[in-house]
Length: 106
Image 1 (cartoon, rainbow, N blue to C red):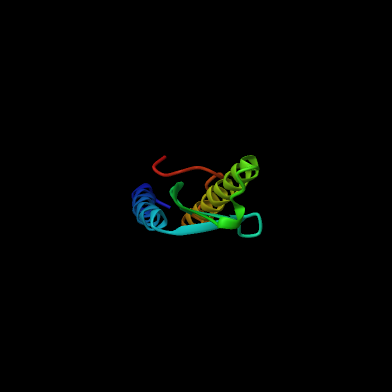
Image 2 (image 1 turned 90 degrees about the horizontal axis):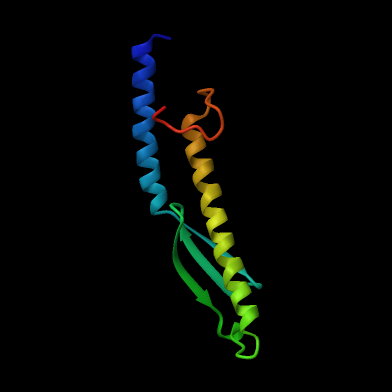
């Protein structure tokens, strides 16, 4: 493969990656903890956009449990967002022989 063709391919992939990142920044994922007592929503650019707490989860005598549920929901939502981002971005570079985690531009 000649160098000009390779550079054009890299530029096209970079443009597609930017487009996909913008799309994923608008894509939301959710994660629930405690059997749905707390649900966190995040975008795939790692921003928390919402937290819903079931009123039954609020016990003034056990604030620590609610804190744990909120933490678990947020952590799960961010992990799901990260996995979605990695999977979708990986589709763009599939078959190029790039080492894992390598981003364009080089």
